[in-house]
Length: 208
Image (cartoon, rainbow, N blue to C red; front, side):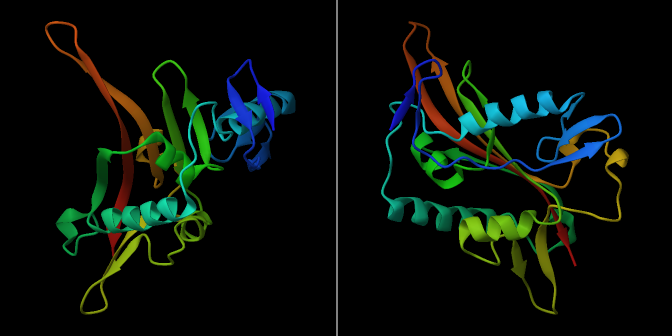
């Protein structure tokens, strides 16, 4: 087991490949959609992202059964936001307390952002293969859809081939699932501080 002392990570986790496409004006990461002028810039970005998916030193490993149960619980929580009426369609957010080790155990290999200053991670899922990718991650083909009477269903929108990305004013408006883990802290009048980890999910729903 090799230890990277500079970044304080233990390199025992698998390295994930990051898809990209070549454009006339540069090289684009398909996950975060950042465009780099050179292939070297994209390669550097990929190497940094790979390090985010290596368990940091001191972060304990939970039993696989605990991680499996957390994924099942997460599917249930996501389902609570899939409502039947059209008035509930659109952007949805979920936030709840979560151990860092649970988040990492569930989403390692898919972490695309890490900020050491505020200790936060982010994962992005979007595109034509995103739903099946998450179905494999959660071991549940219906993780992001709920069926109702009269053949109606509500689902999480991760890709829309009929709408060009240029029509979205902000990246946050893109049809995608963003999973973020971060630490929140509070301090009282006497300087006593408490902190806890929170998981935040953001996505858009649609009915058919």
